[in-house]
Length: 472
Image 1 (tube, helix red, strand yellow):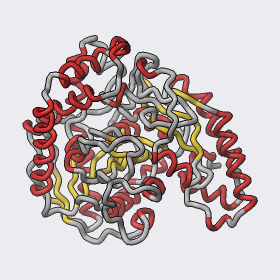
Image 2 (image 1 turned 90 degrees about the horizontal axis):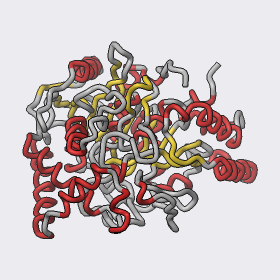
Image 3 (image 1 turned 180 degrees about the vertical axis):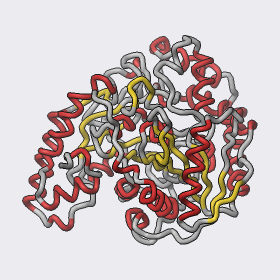
Image 4 (image 1 turned 120 degrees about the horizontal axis):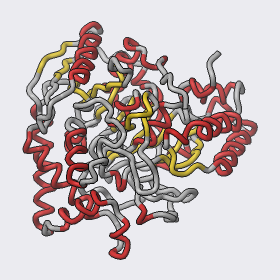
């Protein structure tokens, strides 16, 4: 018999609308799983059962008062917010001791959008300090584990969101991505991780992102859930001052639509030219075989970005670290890797910083031009399998920690710079049982095609029926 947490987010919402299950029962089921499992996963930094149950009771009243057929597609479904996302009803630490106890007077626009779509937040999920590293260890919490093997990291910086969804603690979790932070945990946790186009989803009420790197999205187990999540996120305020064009109809409709024959380029060499694990290449081969069987044309192409891109992105990361809001008195509370990055970033003059950002955007345009002949581009999500716990930090050297982060994120930052939509899909598992994702990259502002072909791969691959076998 299927348990509630084994249903997709959309199927849970359908059960709510039909009366098979109530929002309170659904919330209680997932809260019980958090209580039973999260002591070993470390996916949540804050859990608020009272607030969640209050929201669920309000949802039950809405069901009694209104027309159930008019409810949003994800109404009544449990979710969680990333600890980088400001919320009024729960503290936001940004993964940092320097912000312990901080409570925002405002909700982020994405929090409002998900609430208006009827989702019910159970709490906040873990992140690395200011989202700067590809793991999720903080000074007040241990590293988040992938549910597929608790000896391995869930990745970052949305590692808590990834572990929570993969373990069935929530069916959909809010996440964000400034260099791969949706797609990295998706690969490490066997999930669908869709990074929307830059400007698709609002980053308000915070000031606009001057680097044009950061986007908000969700992590899920199915393509349809990710599409529905994106629909919910874009239903409110536009992502940019000038809204970018959306699909004809909804993103969810795109998941149910055949993509037609696509021309797909593939490559397996990352910008920083690190060696790629054979299992990550094998995942691309698996996806290639399935795409060709579906009637698409797949061609080998040259890597669109090189070492100069990797060096430029690394320097811009130090600028972003330096810009994180930390008072001088609390600087000593930061992790060594964060302090190191801030010191490097603070060394640039204003003119040098502007030149770096301009150079990064110019590089992005050139990369888009190099792949313009293709509807979709295919590559590994990561060059390595999920990393053992402590791999990033056990050396105690902040330079080594950051170098290992840059090694691990060899493929993913490119799409943050270009602004293109990209999705990690769990098409392969290693002989040791670890998930291995591949990344599909769409044309600028074309999430719809990406969602259509991803749904096609999901049907061929069948990953939605696969669950971690470990007991927590």
